[in-house]
Length: 237
Image (cartoon, rainbow, N blue to C red; front, side, top):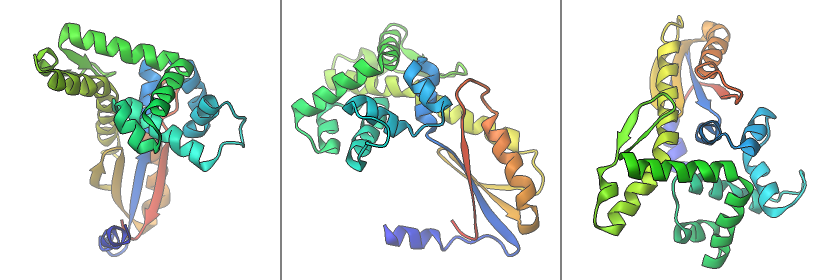
């Protein structure tokens, strides 16, 4: 909201300094592509495409340049809804569609991105068998609620288990980035918010420090999928 943006502007850099924000672009979708090995998602990120537009092209069967804002919005809802285990009813509300239409979106999505669908099914079955999931780096999260006799508790645990390797890997990456960037001179870490790091840097050092931090963050994971970082320089948040 406007009020929220005004509150952010109340947080100022120290005199003679700038606030430099670095955030990973669509990190969870990139992690999903990495973990699932889905060829279409991987290609989209390697080619530097707008992932929501790419998914919309697949779902609606339109060519590049013919994706409308509404198509892209619906594709974005699906992209994140799939990762967070959003059910058909929640998807229906977010899409502004009927239950039948939401169900069809799900079916089409998993048909087009079968690599991701197979990966999510594998996570579900392994979590049920082992009682935990693992991030890309091997960090475990246990889900004893998966064995609950109460269906709604078991279902909620299953949704969390599906998302845990993706969200957990993203969390691992940002923490590794913090460690790698700690050695950069004249850059003082103020905040870590999800996939974003905010530094305070002396004005005369921004041009020197910012590219180094950006490069270190992008090199945390050296895979075929680029983990792109956007940098923004400002006097306030």
